[in-house]
Length: 278
Image (cartoon, rainbow, N blue to C red; front, top):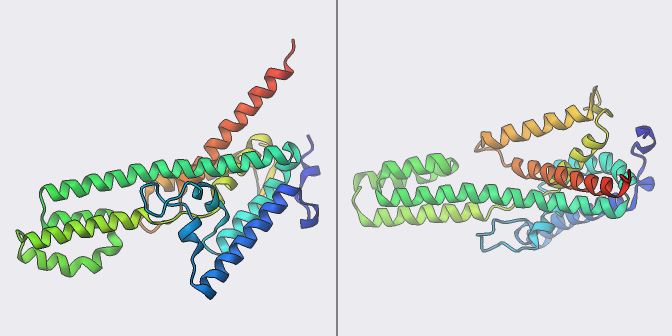
């Protein structure tokens, strides 16, 4: 198959699903900005994906989160990748299969991210229990430093006061309240963006056109298969690095790639089953 015939074209030449996804994402982004600035309504509170243990969680968010973004740069790069690689894939697969793939990888990314959150939050809740079994200012400070470092400054005064009265039940009860409130805050942090589906699209392009050249930042070419492998390895590294200042859902990106890989393998096996008649 000649890759050149599927090179991205102008907006008017886009296939229907890619075109409509670009339009819908753009409209949602404008709605986000308008509602927040004019009416002080944050769509992320309602349509962003929340942890299933959060009071803000709604199952529909597993889909709606894909149409919200955290800023212009976020939506620009996601939509650029959707245009660049989705154009080719929709021409090869057709609209129905491409749309199915987009939503399967997007929802799959959300599910993987939810599992990672569950592991992380369950560990934090276990540490809360451990602190309360032997409550002390040092144990509380260590817990905050490990899991909620950005809040250390706000709690320094409380920790210092508690240190002067380590056995005071009032301080122990307040420490418990602080930890539980912080866990709830973590549960309520929303996830937004089409990145999971976009990473699935990137994976599909690398599997179907492994030797196609991608011009990385427009400077030098790299084959699609190496581009995909490099991106996957970076996401895996940053996911396990768990940098406190990193608010990117790296495992969600990997989730989109994982679900995409297995869906493509399933489709290929199904195709071979009906084409091998020998």
